[in-house]
Length: 449
Ligand SMILES: *Cc1c(COP(=O)(O)O)cnc(C)c1O
Image (cartoon, rainbow, N blue to C red):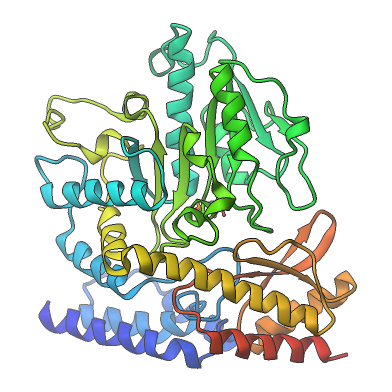
């Protein structure tokens, strides 16, 4: 075990050391060599050293450099050193972190991580929380709590009786709602298409003048951080109207919620603490390893009512917080460990600095590309930049070329009918030099005919 793990750590370190110097996307040859992994299942055991050697030889070169400093696709964080190291240690612990009495260390770490998160994100300190795989499942947990709470007020037991014959709930979303939100609604029986979609402005934020009247059967799903533009819905006013009506406000703040932790960006999410539930990712702006998201619910009892189970063989009774009372999963790894380690290592100022820095990098991209005569088509309020290089064909060609070039990796999108390059800066590892090197490469690709 000792030799294997030491050698594996050395392999991992060599991989990470190599990231800044290799092409971000894997080469076609490296991808082709993955066939070496597609072998018949061995009849007999193979030594772990051989297994690891094979994995590293064929797997590592065919990975996308997402952990490196110049991957700007989707919204992909890296792994902070303390978070990655904590992940390694927690995997050695191998705790099934459902119940405090059985796994006290990881239960306590999650509880402290939850308190710290509510603090840095400026959310109500008494919120319930669930450490889940990502925002997709955070939506599921939070909206299950919403469903429970609104129906319980009508005397209906959503968990016991399901939705057959239940009083109808009305779900309101922005026209730019993320598809994972709609999927959660579908899984919960609230319907992907039964929603009322509120029209949005040119940056994708819900138009208040188009918001329908709310009732105590309404769930309004707002967004903090549009995945293309970074735009934030007018959440303060929506929360005010929801409060008056007794409606529930759920926030998709997968990355945008973290604006609250950065002094120069906090105004963008002002009033967001007045919502009822929030879903966010730690694997995006907090830069912990996959998979890691969190659901926060103002009323912890609503989340517990939707999620907790009992069984004679389970140690569910405790004077302490049982992580498993709040999550869709029973058996689960202790995701809070990395969150704790990341926040511990950054401190409040380090977290603010990381968010400020990535936003500044995004602004630098926007300025440089604008100065070179290309069109930035969104208002760069956070870390997302959309650029057009002219015709859709030309823009797609530049994106294809930059991916093949390997200096950095940017994806494409169609934003309100316009083809654009998406540049999302969210990794702790990206430096000013990485940004300049990437700008030079993008401009070089754009200058080709
Ligand atoms: C990333 C993202 C999601 C989905 O989160 P996962 O962690 O991939 O489940 C949802 N909404 C927004 C706005 C996002 O950026």
